[in-house]
Image (cartoon, rainbow, N blue to C red; front, side, top):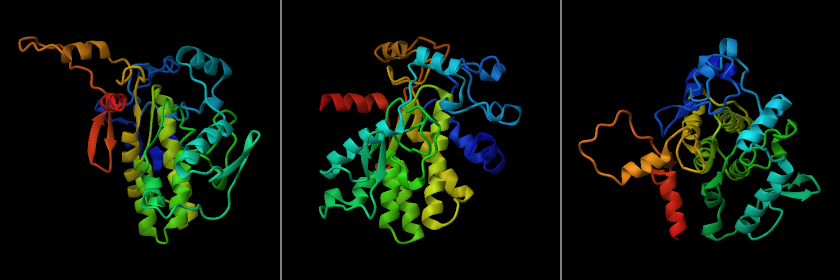
Length: 310
């Protein structure tokens, strides 16, 4: 599922995947890797429909397909280093070992690989540890890149494709649980959507963020085909794309603001009341994320502050 395919078949879905809900515009490139292509591809420019389709179709590629020189520069400038799937799996397994109170729930790791468990995942009879609670548990991948901790359609370091039954992402696990515990299409649609609503990630560079959103959207199609024996409709894809445009957002993790925002200036102005000062430009807006269960939005920094106070 690439940009040109989405542009041709589901243009409204692609436009939704490009949105920055906090800033009220499209996500930014936030990298100079494409600046020689055109004025549309400058680091501080928005990623537009036209900049990634037509003559520019295929311009965005996964890290593993980028030239070695570009990979090295991105590592140098932005500390971009992707994690092998076997390492992602080990860390995700630790999260689930704490939640379930036992190891090897979804797979058994060995050396630099793993073998998926067979049979239905066993959940406690306690209401606080039911499969529905597991699906609704919030999971966040920080500086997510192409989101290898959330979905594992391919190994981000090798490009090797991973079969559906062997996937190890946090969202992969939720969708496996949904598929094992519902017995009709309506319930699958409901709980798979809730799985997406409880899965979050943020990333600075716009091309990686778009790839992450596309990877999660494609995973929705993969699991639907396996569970319901059909592909998503345009409306179903749009519904998931809306969630992804909120839950996978563009942010500088050091400030809690979108790229190129003057966060220090913003914080200073928040503490200064000057009714007669005329602003020449609007203040930068901090990054907002959506709490789908409570039907509220929060700034990332406010949630971080609350967490620190506990």
